[in-house]
Amino acid sequence: MPKLLYMKVKLLIIIALGQLALSCRKTGYFYPLPPDTGKPLKVAIVSDIHYMDPSLFDSNGASGAAFQNYLNQDPKLLQYSAAVWSKVMARLLAAQPDILLVPGDITKDGEKLDHQKMAGFFDKLRSHGIAVYAMPGNHDINNAKAKRYAGDNDYPVAMTSKTEFETIYANFGYRAAIARDTASLSYVVQLRPGLRLLSIDASKYADYGPSGDVAEGRIKPATLTWILAQLARAKKLNIKVFAMMHHNLIEHYTGQSQLDPGYVVDDYQSIADTLMEAGLRVIFTGHYHAQDISSYTYKGNTLFDIETGSLVTPPIPYRFITISNGRLDIRSATISDIGVHFPDGENYTAYANQFLSQHLDGYFYNYLTTLYGAPSSLATFAAPIFRGGIMAHFAGDENLPPDQAALISQLGGYSPQLAAIVTTLWTDTGIPDNNTSVAIPD
Image (tube, rainbow, N blue to C red):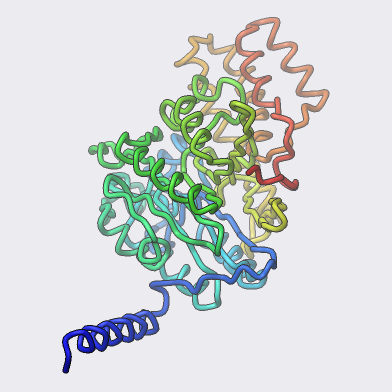
């Protein structure tokens, strides 16, 4: 066979084998790319699921001293997380979005069992045609708080390493990625022709010790360099990029990074400016358990940080977003019934609000006395006012009612500083938080 003909035949064989390999990729490793038919792209967002498998409770462990002490420090409706997720799963299967985004804190504290269970749930969604893209939050990896609870005690259970996380969720972003960051678990996937998702891993799990997770997040210099390269490449190809990150990229109320540190990514002002200059205009976040949309304008361009609340914090929200004709049509939904009977016939909404109210009063009492040196009498008076402000922020679309305004005014007579702080919780940025339509900037 002549050499030139041989080379042509060899090339055709290579191409054919490549096409065969593409056709034989295992289901779940790669999602079929939705065609750009002009039809809207339907996206669901569920953040901060904090799934805790019921098997991690034994001998009334949910009522025991160890678990209750945990809740006093970090009040979340973990005991009902499995029931809530079951309801959300049913609604997702009924709604049939094209894509589900999960911006981190998938589990209570990175228990390997919980991750494995959630991957199984995601696989069921995938089998029904819903592409799932997940990423870690600050609770999900290397977390020594991974525990089971029996009676009044807690006991360590297997936690999840970075490598194990990537393996468990391989079918939910990592194997479908068209680009991966070697310095983190960040990745890029193609959602449809002309649109990519940039998942930014900013959690500090490499630094965790025996005390477990920390709230703070950072984008490593190497990861930032990689992100900028991905945005530049997409811009050159005229492809839009939406980002997803567990931590907020910008503040969602004035002074958030100082008043409640750890929820906006480190050096957020510089990072936001840099990413905006590179072309980023939309990012989906979680972490603070608030249903809130914030915007930031820099050099004539506007960035939208669309934060989704948590399934273990009232009002138990999640989002549906329709992307069409250069706009994001954003709608929110909540879970109010989980099929559990509560005392006095309460529904889940009433129970959840009462639970959070009781725990937040103690949380803010300690916050005010410890951080601000408030005397006990002032902290006792102010704590419920702060609780009202933060719960309004969690729900979104804050609107200060007259009774709370009167209490804040009274608080101002004792401490203008504390009154100013709680007022900022009630001060919305002007963008509707739950149901709105946002133009996608070029």
